[in-house]
Image 1 (cartoon, rainbow, N blue to C red):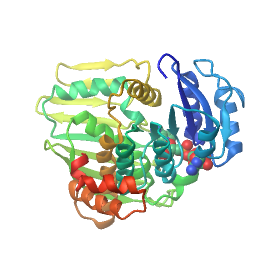
Image 2 (cartoon, rainbow, N blue to C red; image 1 turned 90 degrees about the horizontal axis):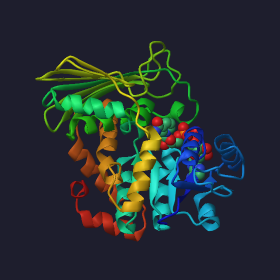
Image 3 (cartoon, rainbow, N blue to C red; image 1 turned 180 degrees about the horizontal axis):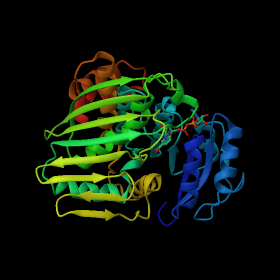
Image 4 (tube, rainbow, N blue to C red; image 1 turned 135 degrees about the horizontal axis):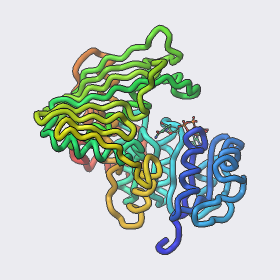
Length: 371
Ligand SMILES: NC(=O)c1ccc[n+]([C@@H]2O[C@H](COP(=O)([O-])OP(=O)(O)OC[C@H]3O[C@@H](n4cnc5c(N)ncnc54)[C@H](O)[C@@H]3O)[C@@H](O)[C@H]2O)c1
């Protein structure tokens, strides 16, 4: 594939699928060659919306026609892709990712890697067994302002406290309305993952409470507060709601870090401040932010063999933060991340998986080995 665009197929053509199709079509070094969705008419419509026609990709590299199909298997039979982008619902991520990996293809998959940590561990074992890259797109790591905020935090010394406030009121419909924990599982993973990135520390334990306000249109808990202890001693507090009408925060949430050297803030958009030196910056966006940033890192990793930040093993602790918060919300008790990972490892060993994957899982002996 050197010297020519990366031939990519996309699986999943829902709301986020359209955003991915637009991003793939605009990428210089990618050629979109196929799109699959269980709902084939939806795949056709998504390609028309994002690429301007049902048959031509309109890719940055001027690719030819886009094959439309009802499954990844059909796409693999009809195209010769170099990589797969998975934008299906979370419950389908494992099946699609593992099929692609065993077809010899690297995969860029939307967050969360899977609905459970055990399934994510199985995927990590599948990536290892096949020697192929499985990267999870945590698109909210790719903001120039987040990088600036990280630099300001580093100037304060190890923070004692990092906080995120996230308040919005989206009416999605679809799978989120029926999830038991829509905010924690579908949204908070972005903030949890960003907290690891900002602090350069790993989560140790969490206490979490979640609830569903009386006016909520979600079936599950649309509000939560979680307090994490991190390995460097920092407390990270996430407070959010998905049914908070009025005065929305950014989709990134509003952030504050407090250390011995002062306070730094990020409004989740372009404004980063620090009391150290009295700085306030208006940070211009980078060329590739959000999913375009994840795609650029993925393409570079496929071409160079470099391990990207979002490789499945690096993402496991972000998913563990979610699962630990959900468990704590259910029991009212503090949940240790290390113990949770080991329990998930035992669960993974009991799942029905290919022999190669089971052998790889067994060879680890413990989840801690792969982290
Ligand atoms: N990064 C972000 O900011 C962001 C934002 C929104 C959604 N997401 C993530 O993107 C993913 C998709 O979300 P969405 O809002 O587009 O969902 P959606 O329900 O609108 O679309 C998902 C599509 O996947 C299809 N699908 C399901 N299983 C499939 C399979 N096995 N093969 C082929 N197609 C299949 C469905 O038919 C549907 O069209 C989720 O993981 C979600 O968490 C990320």
